Each structure stands twice: as structure tokens, then as C-alpha cells.
Amino acid sequence: MAVHGATPVGHAAVRPQWSCSCGDRRWPCATARTLLLLTTDRLNLARHAAGWVYDAAREMPDATPAELFDRFLHWTR
Image (tube, rainbow, N blue to C red; front, side):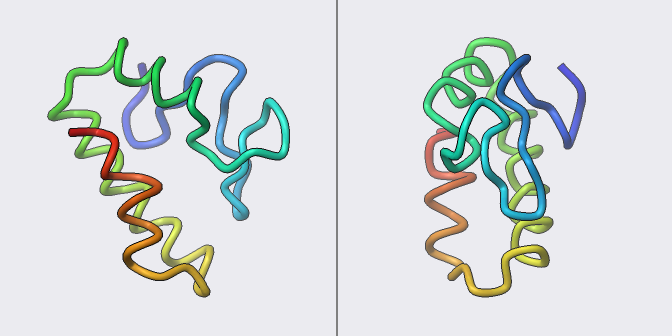
């Protein structure tokens, strides 16, 4: 899997709204999360997720830090 922009096939992040390319769900959707957990070691996944938080914070200025944490980092543990 590629770094920082790693996305499972068919479940890419559509930016700047960060929706899933498979539909109008928020990215990472449940399927993307599962695939990322199965294909990326936890340390690298957490590092990529931190980058996603940084990018999403710039692209979604109305999102709170707690929302960004829950959406991009919390599930990587």
C-alpha cells in the first residue's frame, strides 16, 4: 500500500470533502478501515492517519479536532 495517500482499491478518499469513492459515505468507510487494518502494519497506519488528519483539518475547517481524531485516528489502535 502506498504511504500517506494509502487507499484500498475501490475505496479512495474523494477530497476535499473526504467522502469514499464507493458512494457518499465518509472516508475512511468501514470497508476501507478493515482493508487498511488488514494490509498495513499498525505503526505505519497510525502515521498515515496522522497525515490524513493534518490534510483534512486544512480541507475541512469546520471539523473539530475531536471529529478528526474519531474519524481518522481512533480506529487505528
